[in-house]
Image: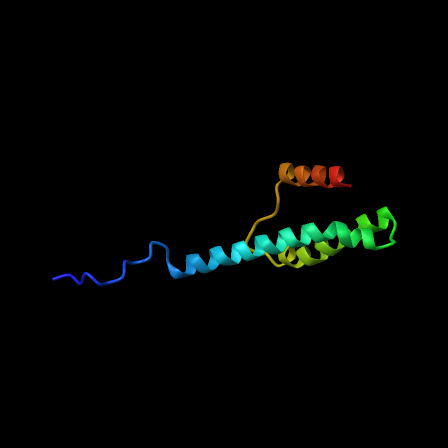
Length: 92
């Protein structure tokens, strides 16, 4: 005998919904940061090269611990390293 009033089971597990909502929150935060960044740059009286230096320095300091503490991943091969360097040169 089946219960006709039983709620249907969710197709996605509870953890998947939480991670999806965190991803959307991160996306919204990124959109807000990018949207406001031009306004903040305009409000400052800092020269362009100094602004570019700090815009690259701060994320490098934030991301460096994640790169340095990731011991599971083997080193980057030569081709990937050259691609990363080329991206940095074009960004500069």
